[in-house]
Image 1 (cartoon, rainbow, N blue to C red):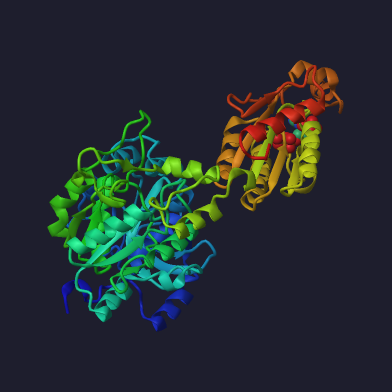
Image 2: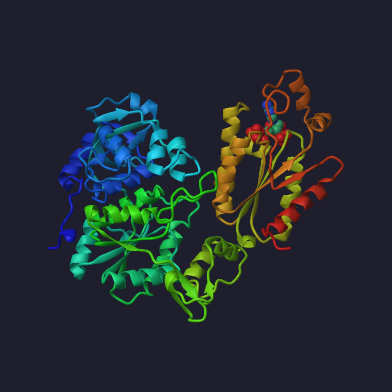
Length: 567
Ligand code: PPS
C-alpha cells in the first residue's frame, strides 16, 4: 500500500471503552467548547491534525509561535490551543482530567491538562499572523473572543461532533484514504476553497489535475471561514452543481470541518499538512492563499506569492507537492479561459470581481454564462435575492419622548399598506412589557434589552420580513453590535430621531422628565444617564417643525433609495 493511503492513527478509544469513559467523564469538570474549538477537536481526534495528540502544551506553543515547529522539531505552523476563561482556569490544576463538551453538553473527549499558562497574545499576533492588527480576523478573535488562559494536554476521543448537514459528504482522513484506495487513486491533487466555484476555478482545478496527472479532490472548508463569506449550505449546493462539470470518475468532493485562521503563508503549510493527512499527494496553492484582506492601513497583510514561496520551501518535509495556481482569465475572442501569463497581446480579457458579482446579485442583474454556471448563479440568487425581496431592519434611536414610537407606528402602517413583506414593530415600551419585563435601566440591563431586540430583529430579517425597532438604545457600542447581528442577513437602517433634549423635556408627554429632574427616576437618559448621538446613521430626522407623516415619509424615501422597497 502506498504510504499516503495507509491508515492514520486517530485519538478515539474503542466503542466499549468510549461508553465507560463517557460515564466516568460525567464526574469531571467540564469545558463547553467554542465553535472553533469543536472544529479543532474534530480534526485532532480524526487525525486531520496528525501528529498532534491534543491541544498544544506551553513548550510546543512557544516553539510553534516562534519557529513553526513543535518542541521536538516537527513542522507545525499553527497554534491549536484550548483557550478558556480565567474563572474556569482557576478551577484547574495541571495533572487534572477535564471533559470537553459540545454546545449541547455532549461529552466528545477528555483531556489531561498538563499545562496552564497566560499567553502573550500580542506576540502570538505578531509572529503567527504577521501583525498585532485587529483588522486581521484571527487577531480580532484572539483579543476579543479567545479566553485569557490556555490549557494544553493530550486528548482522548470519545465521539466526533454530530453533524446533521451533508453527512454523506463529510469524510475523516481515514475514510478518504480508504476511498482513494478503493478507487485506485494513487495521485490526488486537493483544492482548498471557501468560496463558490465559478468557471475559472473549474478550469484551473481541472488543468492542475491534468498537469499533476492526478485525480482531483475538491475539499471545501465548511467549519469556520472568513466573516462575511457565503454560508456553507449555499456553497455546498453550488459545489454539488459544479461536480457534474468535471469528466466523470476523475473528481470527488469532500467537506472539511476546519476552522480557518486566514493566516496566509503559515495557513497554506497547515492546509498542506491537513491534505497530506487526508491522503492527497498534491495541493493547489493560489495567489494570496488564505488571505485575510487588508490591514488597518489599507494594505495587504502578506505578499501575493508569500504562501507559494513558503510552501515550496517545505513541501518535501510535509510530503505533499505544490501545484501553483495559474491565474485563469476569460479571453473574449477565443471564448475560453486561459492562464493569464499565456495570453496573446491585444486579447480582450473579461473579469467580474467578487464585489461586482455581489452588486449584480443584489440588484438582480445578469451574471454572464462565461463567468459562472447557471446552476451556481441560481443558488446564489436564491440566497441573495434582490434587495427589494430581502428582509431588513429599521432601527429608530433617540431620547425618550423624541417621537420614535409615533414615527415607527406611521411607518408600520405605510409598509403594511404596501403589503409585500410581513412587518413587525418592536417598540421600546412594548418590548419592555413582553420581552424584557424583568429589566431596569442600568447599563447592563439596557444592553441586554437592546441585544434581545437585535436578536428578534435579526431573525425577522433572516426570514425575509421587516423589523421596525424603536428603543432609546443610548449606547453606540450596543447599536453597533446589533448592526453586525442584522447585517449578516439584510440591511440595517439606523434612523436617529434627533429631537433635542430641551424639546423632549418641554413636551414631557409622560411626565417622566419632571420626575427625573426631581430625582424620582434614576439613570434617566439625557438627564442622569448618557445618550451617544449616532455619528453616521443612515438617516437623521428632525421632528421639530415637521409632522409625523412627513417624518415617516422621509424614512420611506430612504428605503426606496437603498433599493429595499420598490419605488
Ligand atoms: S433602552 O435604554 O433602550 O433600554 O430603553 P427603552 O427600552 O427604549 O425604554 C425606554 C422607555 O422606558 C421609560 N423609562 C425610561 N427611559 C429612560 N431612562 C429611564 N431611566 C427610564 N425609566 C423608564 C420611558 O418611557 C421610555 O419610553 P420612550 O418611548 O422612549 O419615551
